[in-house]
Image 1 (cartoon, helix red, strand yellow):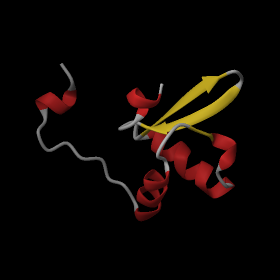
Image 2 (cartoon, helix red, strand yellow; image 1 turned 30 degrees about the vertical axis):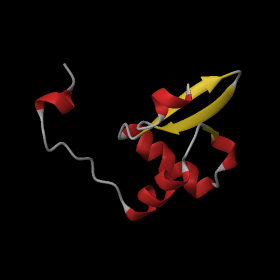
Image 3 (spheres, one colour; image 1 turned 120 degrees about the horizontal axis):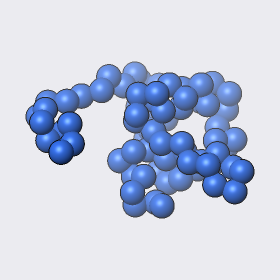
Image 4 (spheres, helix red, strand yellow; image 1 turned 90 degrees about the vertical axis):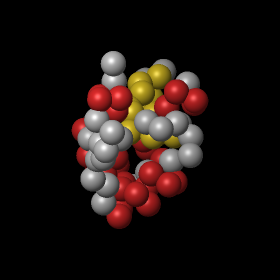
Amino acid sequence: MKINELISDFEIYVSNEESALLSRMQHTQPMESFTEREQFIIENMIRKSIVTKIVKNNQILVVSNERSQDSC
């Protein structure tokens, strides 16, 4: 059973910077395609479980969790 099934109003705080960056993450992208500041924000979102980090062929890819199942 997932936690979202147990808690109906489960929300994770997302800052304006994180929200803007998430809106740009339409598909799986290499981490190197982002600026240093954006990479820092993405690392924070990975810790919050908003973004997933995928290592494939020695390359780090990131994808929004809402789209992670569709892209892989």
